[in-house]
Length: 205
Image 1: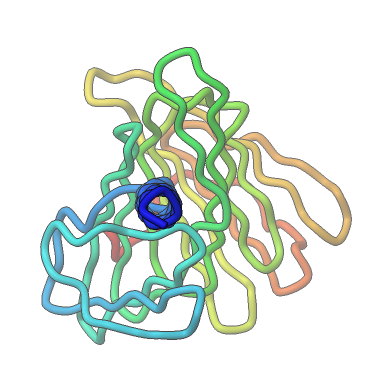
Image 2: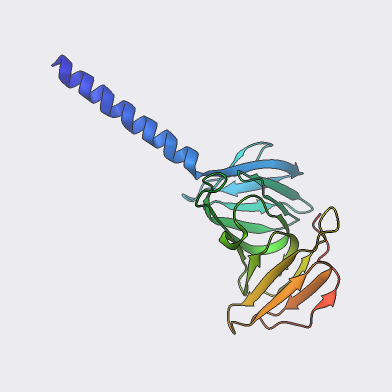
């Protein structure tokens, strides 16, 4: 009987440890700045207001309030800032440390966003919008996504004047444009690009 009790306790402890490890693996970063309010809706549907340093969970939807902003710092050091009335989901995030098999996919639903890449290999990082896919080449870039799926992307210069670039691909036509620091491109709700111009997406710092 005693051996059976010990076995049951051991099994329960194993399940608890595994459950804690699984929950820990689902954490992709934390809320590193909030102005004045933002929320997180978990994959199972529960929504709660975020507090500073709260963990951000993979597959949860993040949302900012009117005139609000949220900064997320991911485990690999990448940073994502959301402007007012913005929504996104971290669809995929695996960080295995330097040199590991890591991957990051973020899906913007609507709003204003600024992304600063981290240590995940750039060819394993992408940003999805309803109409275009943005590929990373080591960069800081901004994105606006409107309610109908139209929007714009712009690329910033590095802190020491480094030139960055992103690829922007239309989901409907498959056409890709390369956008470099100081440049901006708009797209309509079918992913048709306007001409590349000098400028930046405003409203998200």
